[in-house]
Length: 172
Image (cartoon, rainbow, N blue to C red; front, side):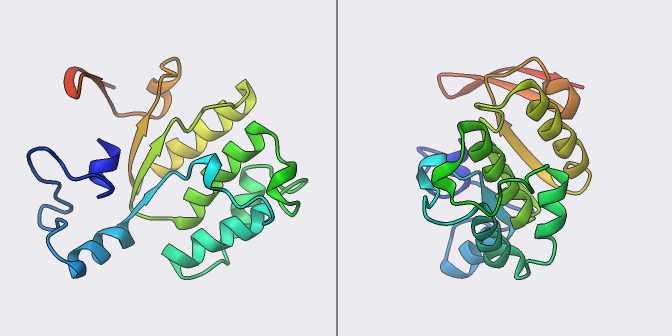
């Protein structure tokens, strides 16, 4: 579903609309959608030779056009002790927190986050959950997760999918 929403894959049927009017009809609309939408980076797509700060600035510049909010994100996610080191030195949890920080740096109104809690310890799951609770106030955030224990903390709705179809909806 996320791949269709991000236009990485064409849908078998139906259409994706943003703000009820924009779809992937033409290049102008695609650009408009991509300014509004960021997708959670995969750890395999991180550049090993760049620092965490470099990655965050890259996302901030691509979507926000400014990097002045990056230091606040570093502080909020407690990344100061490692964020200037090359990514090749990061643990799985540090990489995952960096990917989340990149989303925060992009600061788009719509965010697609696939397995955002993957590889995080309990403390960092709580930290990311807190950030998601704050971010959902002015963003539309989709989170795909197999970690169901804390969804009620940050989700307004949980949709359960099976074989590409919605089978249950839970509202909070």
